[in-house]
Image 1: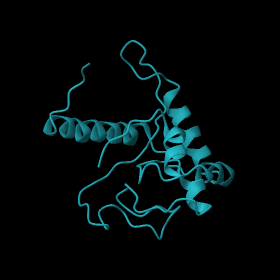
Image 2 (image 1 turned 30 degrees about the vertical axis):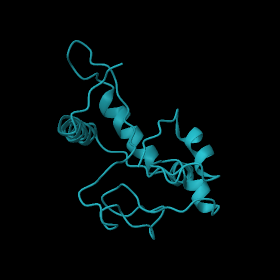
Image 3 (image 1 turned 45 degrees about the vertical axis):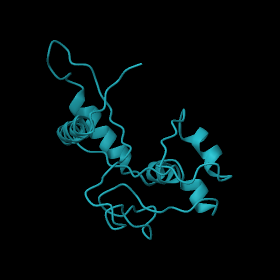
Length: 146
């Protein structure tokens, strides 16, 4: 494999569709998969995706202990070292919105599976991701340079 850096998924799709690249890791391919323009080989989640239940996980496809997912979190600045008073209500509102069928349908159409977790669950997830990917960077001796 040769890594080809792109400035976003849309740019990479432009080379994937006509076959200038053989495959890509991407979280925005659902429309092209649904239209039959590309074939999903595996998903990077620990369990099969609700959006593509027939597609195996990378682990099922033979690449063990691999997990890579695109995720988004909603963050607020600390005020004086403390969580702002609005956070519990904001979190509850976001959790409620993520359960609305119309919102879920819009997110599913974009290839996203809504979670809407608590601030504590989100922090645990972010900490786990940081630790996991930090270990990968260290193990692979990856450095940022010119």
